[in-house]
Image (cartoon, rainbow, N blue to C red; front, side, top):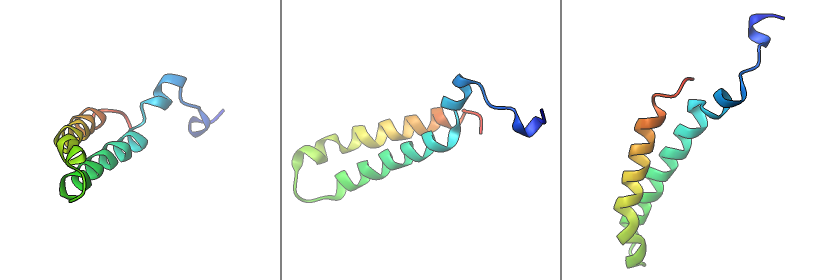
Length: 66
């Protein structure tokens, strides 16, 4: 069994940086869209919390292994 063929354990597969980083960036982008849209005050009201959650998520995910 070669070193490159070794599968990652179940838990470390969940902690891969790539998909979680993409999700956090999508959340940040969604929050920005919510902030600048002119139709709904409810979306505007939740935009800061959404951007903040995405930013905190990105900071946490940046410590995950690649």
